[in-house]
Amino acid sequence: MSLKSFLTKIPIIAFLSMVVLFKTNASAADTVWQNDYEYKLFDPNYLSGMSKANIEALFGTEPLIQLHRYKGNETIIRIPATATVYGETYKTYLGNLYSNDKDNSIPFFENAPEIESISFEDGCIMNRLNFVTNCTSLKTLDFTGSVGFLRGHVHHSNINDCPNLEYINYYGVIFVGERNNLKNCKSLKRITTPAEIPYRKDRSDHEKTLLPYAMFVYKDSTYTGKPYLYLEDAPPNTLIAAKEAVAKPDKSIIKYNNLKYRVLSSGRKEVELMGPIKKCPSKLIIDDTITDENGTIYRVKSIAKKAFYRNKQLENLKIYNDGITIKSKAFADCPKLKKVFIEDHNAVLKPQAFKSSGIKKVTFYGAYVFTIDLIIGKEAFKDCTKLSEIVFDGLWRMNMKKTIKKNCFKGIKSKAMVRFTGAEGPGLPLEHFKDFHPKGKAIVKYINKFGGASDAKPKLPTG
Image (cartoon, rainbow, N blue to C red; front, top):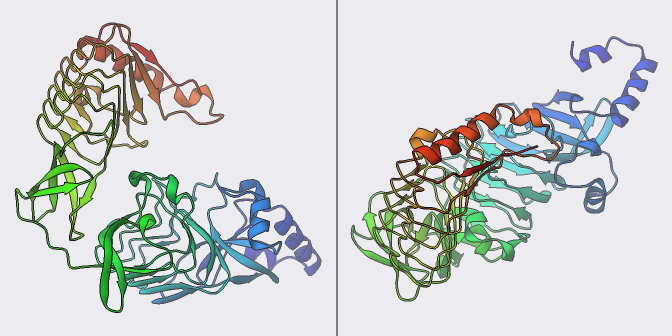
């Protein structure tokens, strides 16, 4: 029996007692559907991302109720700023309050093909991980009535898979985004930028919100200034828009951030990194996209054979991509290269990709994925004699026979440590890892036997 049905069957005195109990002892189970919205009572014990003091400092001490999700069939949506539930009036909080709620990752709007426009009543509080996904008719999204901030996450994105979304208005909003936002929004070519983006200056490109297209400041029907690839880089409270993207012909050369790229496919807008233009920086970050001088965005699909071969300047390498191919000897014989970080569970390292380099530590990061296509090719790290630490972060589900190729770690430092991280969590019991420990040991055994390492040792999570 639903809570609402139960309340209609008890005396009025018991009803009033229940309201008080419901308000003061809220839990994740205290929910009600009303006007196509699901509401959950606010409980500071389940706050995710904001303390009770911060909530009150930002939004006052009025009673809050969480606006959890929508299940209706309207075409024009205006999200309410207040709600009256069982005679009590609340300010609505559109957010993920219940961090231990199994429904925490459910988008607010999901698989709703009827919706064409979404906006907010003034004063609606917004702090949401998942907001809109797979709303195929959605054309406009206006956040100007909302208070607070949006919060993106590498796993739980804000606005994705809306192929007909044309315009987002963030004017006046505090926005905190992440890289996996605005994915598959191929019609989105105009955005009014937020008033403020916290951490803007502290973020590297791979942590920012990648725009579907490079966008320019658009004023008086004119595109001005340089193209912006990331929302965080554009000026605040400004309309930015994309030009019609025209890719360069195949085999054209593009210069970007002192690196040289060759166009592999004009149609697919894919490029290969050929190497530095002149002097290579000591710290090199390779992201998954670049742009040319006209604002056309290209996907970095590969790093060319011998692109950085025998480079004597490179010391620290970070690769953030999804499905990059690092070709043979791309970073071989780089004596000063000490650290390599690859955030790409689909990366393919071709034979001898890093052979005979000075690497001491290599990290493969997978963001807790279930499907892993990482391939560490034959002799990829052969004769990296200083390599003493190999880290697999979030990749404990790897298929070792698919990932580890013959002699990929042959000649590395004896008794190198193979660390498995990312499976840990604060306060998680050892039982959480009981199924992983045998697999971790088996992977290290395979690295020694087939991968050519000499007595490598496992370092397993302990909870």
